[in-house]
Image (cartoon, rainbow, N blue to C red; front, side, top):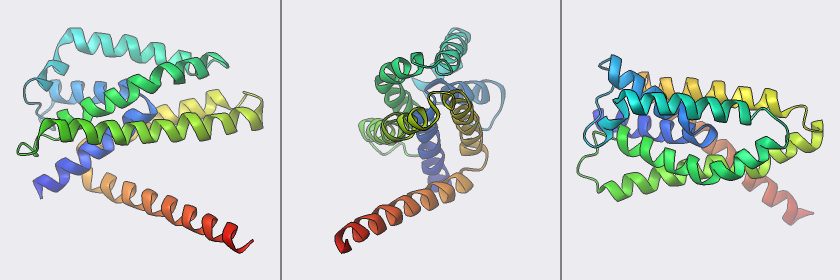
Length: 189
């Protein structure tokens, strides 16, 4: 059971990093430093350093405000196209502590793919649609909701990883079903 919860936790944290790079890393760092909910093995225990926590707070604040300003948010998303997948890789590898027999490259790759996929959907599909339909006025509320979702998902991924696993499976299944249905509708038309 510990392996399954570790995997769900890792996937949840890396998905959260696709929305906001610094929130899941900060949640992992703070929970590892102040609680027994997560124990980071070297070299990931570096996240609990006060310097790293301070840096994550500063970078998180910069991303928080940059993502709320029209036009600046698109530049931020372009920059974050490199940062969020890397953060997802770190979050996945750091939290997948129970998968010690798996090569670290696999953990990093999975985290990179999950966070990169979430970020791609957010920055290529969702955000441009919000900008186009609201003239940019909807970007700040959507960005705020992304931050809230990222925070809640990060905390739940550590506290109740099975719930996060079920949610991620349901979302993935729904998206696949929707895409399949959409492809069939095009073929029939």
